[in-house]
Image (cartoon, rainbow, N blue to C red; front, side, top):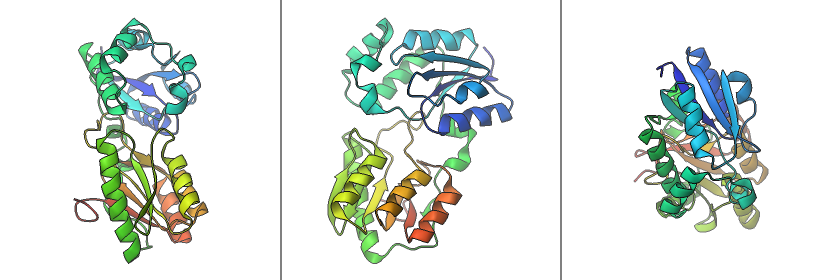
Length: 277
């Protein structure tokens, strides 16, 4: 085992690729695993070692990391939960089956905590992927030149309170509100689909909030937004987006904020000083 070897569990999107590149730039060796149909295949071109598994092959994942002398594990990227829930896409080995039976599939957070326990029980500590890319964390305060209107602030506060309760129940992280009415809450479909649904129902001038769920593990599952999120808000003429500062990732931030300003969308990094508790 070497402190220079990291194990990367790669999901979809740009995050696992950014993590792999950052690790290589910092002189680290990357042993990465991905999942057929879910992971960013470009990671295989950056990692020094790569293995493609079926979702649920926990024993093979652990064996791969041990064989390559991994000292710590990072998880980065998304998994389409609606696809992953289809039984044809899951191949649980004995170890994964025991874990799932013990957890009784009670939610994302519990599943992630169980996975972390399994890895760390094998001497594979799990660390936050964003430690390699701290610049991706969302800053606090109003991030755009566009300021939220008085009504937008009221709606952001309602969306925040609703999203916190949604997160407490381990259901989702995103809520869409317009003029004091909740238009959509996130469930299985994910953030982008939630925003589309909420804005389609309520029309222009909606706001959206995405939060860090209470009890969520910062090591494996930070909420994230990016240019694609802003483009959807622009398409539906939304007026504000709130994202938890310091506990969420903001991809392509400079470009996304420029698009938001052109569209008249205020983007806020939620903290104790602004919209916080």
